[in-house]
Length: 120
Image (cartoon, rainbow, N blue to C red; front, side, top):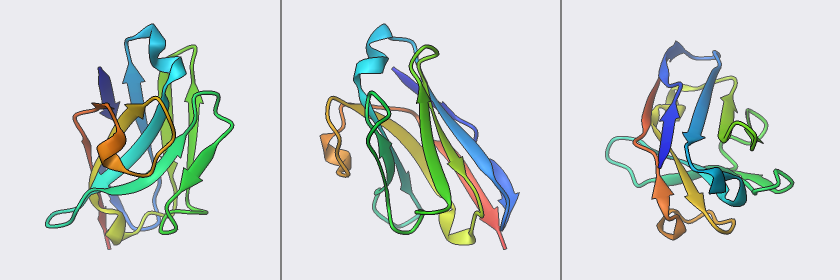
């Protein structure tokens, strides 16, 4: 089970850090992805991190603004979002998978989502 948190309402240019936490000790063996879904739009890939934190990948729209990290001792993954823009407004979801993927349909476990709203 995954629990994502850290969303909120911020102004453009601000930062937020989202967290994804899991209670299972097997969390450290999973790749973690972040996805987002804006109203009326399909869920889209944001970033992922491999289980050893060696492999990461970002959507072009967030590259150079977002970073991703994980602490397997604490069973958490963080998505640091800087220089936020109004177009980043969406519900953000973390998800777990046994391999790296940018496709949401390939992820096995999902958090409940956390709302990020960026005002202009």
